Length: 121
Length: 112
Image (cartoon, rainbow over all chains, first blue to last red):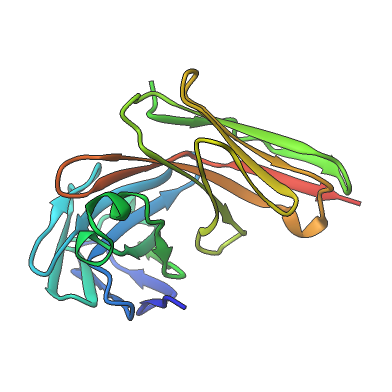
């Protein structure tokens, strides 16, 4: 079974703090994703990575950065936390073209971590 | 117009009822379709993929209508344990990877 582990389940930080959210997957997946989920807005993609040291902006990258130094680890960084970044953050992974072939990788579902509920006060 | 739209519900149904959800998508280049289930305060988990010919998994049936650009999920003989939010997910290729877009979810509450 795929395991995606997020380092913290609950986190409380102060405005202006630098925040690191860590995500590790154990299935050698190429693709990794960071989403945030807010009531009424659903899941929104912040950043994703399809290979080590590669990253691409999602739909709402402002105020965030990411790091993928190793294949199994994808970190989300809030450079200066703000109250509007209070949310549930979900990391996910999926096999990429290297594992499944290009077309198959488009059809592979996501495996999610159990989420980090971040509160910024 | 949102890329993926769902009726947020809630759908309140008695145990044993049949319930159906629809999800519409706006981009005709969309390639893959999924239904995820999300329990309260938990992460989304894959319920089933949606294939062009339609597919069934026990009490759950998924259908795809490319002409009208919607997918559906039918749950027969609802159980209390089916209470959850159901998210539809649509993917389309963007070159280096596929872009997944989630609907905001439809909440189902099954009651005695």
